[in-house]
Image: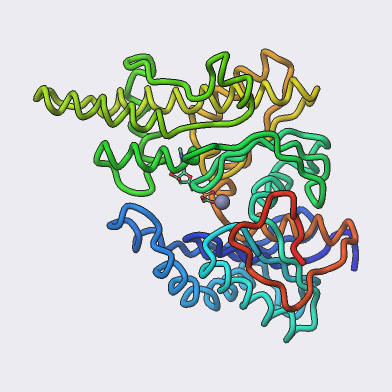
Length: 349
Ligand code: KG4
Ligand code: ZN
């Protein structure tokens, strides 16, 4: 195998069935089938519905990816799959599919960490990762600050949310405002015509006392409650809720804390490169604020384009490709799905 391996990556940790194909760090195909519309009326992802949708979408999505990449399945050098963290039933579908492919094609199998894959994907757009770098990972299920020494094996968590994830906060606040699920993109859009200083919402875990114990941790549940109280008070008084202003002020509070803590973490480690990944990294205000404040500190910011921030198969293929190139041994063919795989386990058994 060369250091430019042809890797097929499968992602099924939540509601996106993703199949990506890369050669080295060149993206050849990124096929995604989403079941998001099936979950919208429940206001959140329903695990059983997601698993069934993965099952139905798997083979067509693999076929679509191969067709786009112009390859046949037996051309690939390795199969990579998200083995965790994520929804157990959803992960199982991807892991079972990856095992079947690897066994029938006689190719090595790599069970990889979803969070590390959110970091590795940036290499498809901006080239090799500077090492070390600081990663701010913000999605529907996770909000973490990670020190990345080597994305294929050495990741040290510096902080994480102690309650809701950033994306979860976006989704819950969107629901309060009557916006559809998933709420992040809708808040982003509404906020564009609102005022970010209209309402002074709280910045979680930023008081001097909180910083002593939780300098690099996040908390968004107090913010969500504060938005709910504000909206309820408006409704009780019979006044219309200024959706755009609430969205902009809420978004400003989330981004302010994320960027402040990420830059503090980078500075404290003497790291000059900040990478932002995960679904919330698609947020336009987060991208602009990070860029602006980081530049003032001499820190460079890398954010993949929005389509690579949300869940996809290319990120799994990208991490798989880096792992193969580093010569790490493959996972065993009885690789389990692990819904709570820690971020320190980049490559699973
Ligand atoms: O990474 P992802 O696709 O799935 C998980 O691993 O969770 O992230 C999905 C999350 C959702 O909560 C969604 O509302 C949020 O990312 N999101 C956004 C934006 N686009 C997606 N949040 C804020 N602004 C956006 N533009
Ligand atoms: Zn994700």
